[in-house]
Image (cartoon, rainbow, N blue to C red):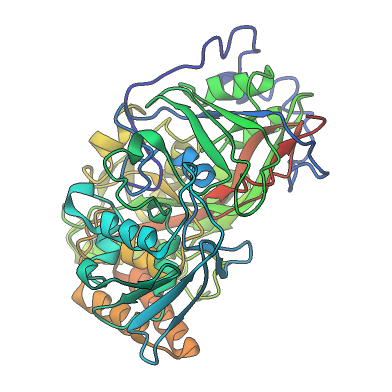
Length: 527
């Protein structure tokens, strides 16, 4: 399932909405007082230097009772991970790979064996020194069948856990089954946070890592608290602590922010109307993260009519992505043109088929599906799902396609609808390196392949790309992979949305890229 969707029992922040002004969707859509007079949405978070200390209060969406602090798990408590742990390698603000717990890495001439140099002077929260054995153990834990990590499908074809070597305390050697020039990028995923050697049995409860914060308390699907780790290798974080609350829905989270009861809405992309209300308030504002969310309408290629590539192509040609951006996002995003690689990625190709409803009609007629009628499932899990679905419905009508929009429960959306219904709405965070994206979401057999699309030629193309050591040629091959997905795959990508993050006007140092923010530098004014 995409990124951080943890459906399950809802837990509500105590008194989160008591005394808060109601922020119901119907009220927002009327253009009532405040919304119509609201200023243009901010493009950046508030500037200035935060004060040292203080407690940041974060409201997060409902989570599963089974959520865990084990970063390798499919049910990891995502918001805690970047605070408690570090990876070997991470993605920098400009999209390049930068050191984290590995201060350097290098391949052999064929990109078949990678050697990582582990950073010195790093300690875990329990006082243990970080060594290469911890890094090797982390990879073995991800690959272990009992862990059932989503990242295992990405790494298992490459790594034999028995062949990992640690010649000394600061050196990790990773021999690969096949050459891969992009291998370090695969370690940037949040399932790859480093845990202590031998900690698998208890890590889901203890959260012992090398991150800027250490665990004080954690309740699955409920509240929790982390405090500053004084001996963090990168320096002490600005904040003293972060409190987490699980809040039932978007309106409740927004009301809590407007009432001054929380400072940041995590994993919540505000709809445009709500964002304008928040930005116009005295207590809160918006941090706008450009093209941070990739919205998708996956067609399940194992279910009729989407088993036929002509139908999939018709569904893509039938609608106008620029219209969907205008209607669903009020322009706060970029048209996707069914390419999952975001425009900011150096590998992105700009070529794409144009909106052509007449050609869509022709393809449907050839496939025996003239006058196609299909159900498109959505829910309130994300506020953009339904506007996107309705905009697609309206645009595709010109090609003679009848879309019946069905609203499903948010609580069960990612257990009963996602990867089960032939057509539905979903999203992912951008920030994945291109090989990670294609391998995890589009390669045959991946547990996150939400369209169940399987094409041996595409898989072989990925293999050629990752084995290519010439940077320019490798980029060309990933360009071919994009064309392959656009023309034959089952995923429609109408748009990349700017993520509209609700934050208190007291928050300073909020900087986000990919799908996480800077826990080390964030703070509060006058804390």
